[in-house]
Image 1 (cartoon, rainbow, N blue to C red):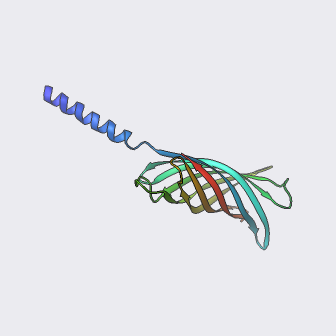
Image 2 (cartoon, helix red, strand yellow):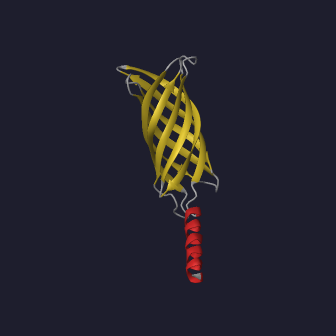
Image 3 (cartoon, rainbow, N blue to C red):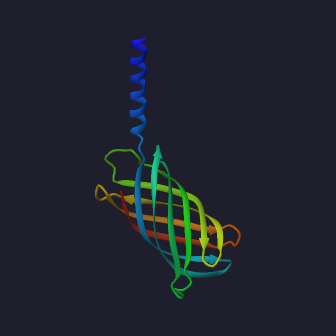
Length: 162
């Protein structure tokens, strides 16, 4: 009986240490976007400012959320807000010694201003960790409304923190 209790205690300790070794790696980021919007044949250049965060929870797979304000350069009062919830995959997650972190992202987008529209987004990018906790991030992302057919492709330049 005593041996089985010790075995059970050892198994429990190993299980707890295995779970605690998989604590999610998290990062926050801020960015400036340069892009445009396309609707049928109409297009206009856009800027964007935003930020968010994400956590990696299993073998490079993670989840994140962010908020963005897109604004046309010609009409700054035409700001459109976008809230994103994403699934991410980081190709080099958990690999020791690498400073390069390529990733892909996709998920749900909520566009809002005086009303709201649902949409989707997809993209990918690269973070270069030049310091243990600070990295330079570049990303391409296309965000689309589902019903209206609006597209917001943009290149984003930013800073990541972990």
